[in-house]
Image (cartoon, rainbow, N blue to C red; front, side):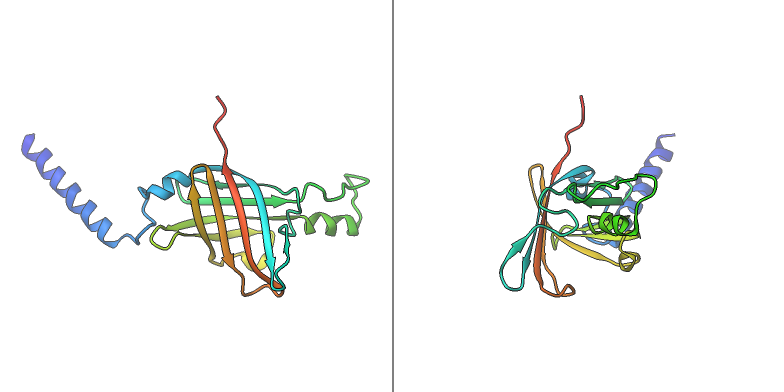
Length: 177
């Protein structure tokens, strides 16, 4: 029995060494940053810096934005941001086309998998569902800074006319006791 356990321990050690040698850096399940990300994050603030130097809240969230970002241990994520100041529908069961457009202009959401590259301080969101159709199947780069219970994404923007960069800050939601 002892010989069998030693053999099993050796096999497990070899497999672990093989896996760690071939697992992409920063994406392993035991990644320290990944462990800190797991859970729910509440939106604190958003800001776009325009190419002319002016600043504004992220358009989908508005100045009083609400939102959640959730990371799971099995590698899935979901993000939702909304402008709580968007107009309510006069008839909740039968909104007008203009009311529908207004509601969508104040909301963005996507879900899928995520990867963490600790060496580059980047989280990649890999949307499988999204309010914005062009997000599905993309690799959304989120350079991050994690300080205590605050997670901040900040990056330059090259594909949105008039916008130079963005910053989005999230606060880790404390579990209810």
